[in-house]
Length: 166
Ligand SMILES: [Zn+2]
Image (cartoon, rainbow, N blue to C red):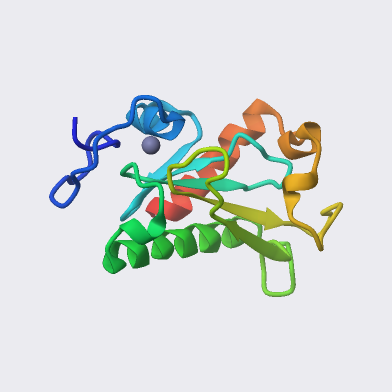
């Protein structure tokens, strides 16, 4: 298989799946994930495992790439367009939030420190955020996970998927 995300248009993709990469593994079964949201131009979008910030989404590059700069500029631009689309969907899904609608702030993070396959975290920071001036990475695992029930999480995934694919 040449493409990490089965079923995508592979015309310009030639990056092999890296079997030891957890995100390549996630991509191979992404559509069966109850928190799958959408396939966009260069990424697959999931509602994140952590919902301490409700609406936290993760975009996974469809191909295994460790450094964004390894991609041609047009693919980098399409990936960031995906990121912006997800942020807009998150803001629209929480219309009661900040002054402009939605969460007070959106954090955009592309780290790669733990999994070296380009992925973006789109993290809504809501009005009740306990540390609104800091990144979330200092939170405890319990804070990161949050208290959202499994049912609420699936319902939120459906709501966000509708905004991304509608
Ligand atoms: Zn990978």
